[in-house]
Length: 180
Image 1 (spheres, rainbow, N blue to C red):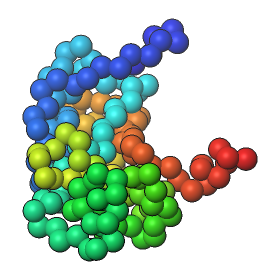
Image 2 (image 1 turned 180 degrees about the horizontal axis):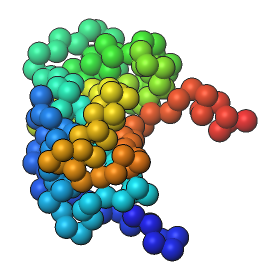
Image 3 (image 1 turned 180 degrees about the vertical axis):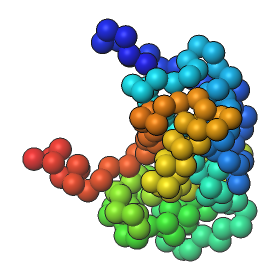
């Protein structure tokens, strides 16, 4: 929310741990509707949904116990003290490997993003588990905004913005323009 040039960041309470198959738009709407400090949202409010939450809801999760790393992944992992199964997942997710050095793998995804470790993330998940870069699609944003601005879960005007930041993701064009 803004008020005279001021920006406030307010965490939405009441969201449980997100699991594969959860109806993320409905869960966020319910939490927003019950949060009196900000409900209902205003047209100038922005709702930020983390990539991790989207990945979990979409089931973009890999149990590393099911991953058999190739020799290249094992060698890289041994050299840089990494889990070879996680390195294997990064390599599988890559449309192209841009660079592998100093323990970091830079890849291009099938969506055209250049990412450290291919958007594969082991933070805030169970041990021996990683999440993949979820597909926070235009359809999901449309669904969220429609769900939030109508019916019994009305908690936001149609103009409310919904964004999902992509950690460690840099589109190729932005990367080039920053280096000129």
